Length: 292
Image: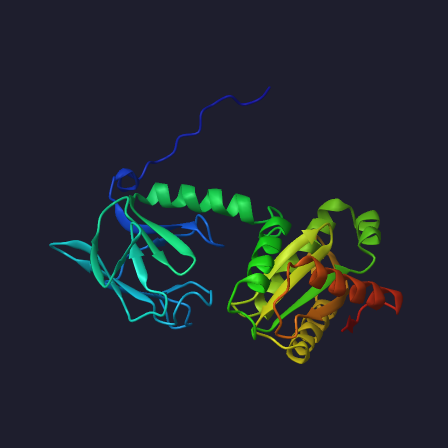
C-alpha cells in the first residue's frame, strides 16, 4: 500500500520578507526580459566589457550612462557624453531622477525601472529562461539564437564586425540512442553542451539548434580564429567519455564554419546555410572534423 503520510518541512521565514530590490528590466532590444538588480552605488551601462550592464550594440557607447543609488533621492541616471544620448520617458537628458515605472533608452534598448522582490526576480528569470533556453542542455534554443544572430548581422553600424558561426552535429547519434537508450543519449547531449559552454568566451553564444545539432556564434571572430576554437572543441569532445552507470560512452562531432567577412547581411539564413553546407561536407568526408 502506498504511504500517504505528509512529509514535514521546515520553513525559513526570512524567505517571506517582502524586501524590494531596485531593478531595471529590458523591455525592448535583443535581451527582452533580462533583469539587472541595482545593488551597487554606481552602475555603468555601455557596450564595453568593463561596463556593469553590457548592452552589446553599436548604438550604445562604450560607457554610455551611469545609474547611481542616492539615499535621499533614489535612482539617478546620468549620460556619460554618449554618441546617441540617453532618454528618460522619451526626453533626452543629461541627468535625471528615476522613479518606479520610468522607462529610459540607451541606444536601441529600453529599460524600465521596477522594485522587485527576490521571488519576482526569480520568477521573471525563469520565465525568460523557459523562452530562451533548451530544457535538456541549458543552452539557448533555436528561436533565441536565430533572433540574436539576425540582430548581430543586420544592425546598422556593424559593418566591420566579424561574426563567425559553427554548425556542429554529433556523429552517429542514432547509434548511441539505439545502443544505450535515449536516457544515455540525453546524457551525451548534456555533456557535449557543457564542453561547448566551457570552451567559448562569455561574449559567444551556444545553442541547441535541433536534435543533436548545435550552433555556436563567435562574436568579433575571424574564420581562422573560429577554426582554432572549433578544432579545440572537436578534440575535447573526442577525448571525453560520458559516464552512464558503469559505461563510458564516446562520441565525436563534425563542424561546419561560416563567416560574414565583416559585412552586413540581410538576415542570418544565408550564413547558417553556408555553415550547414560545410557541416554536410565534414560528414561526407568522414566525420569528426572541422570544415570551413
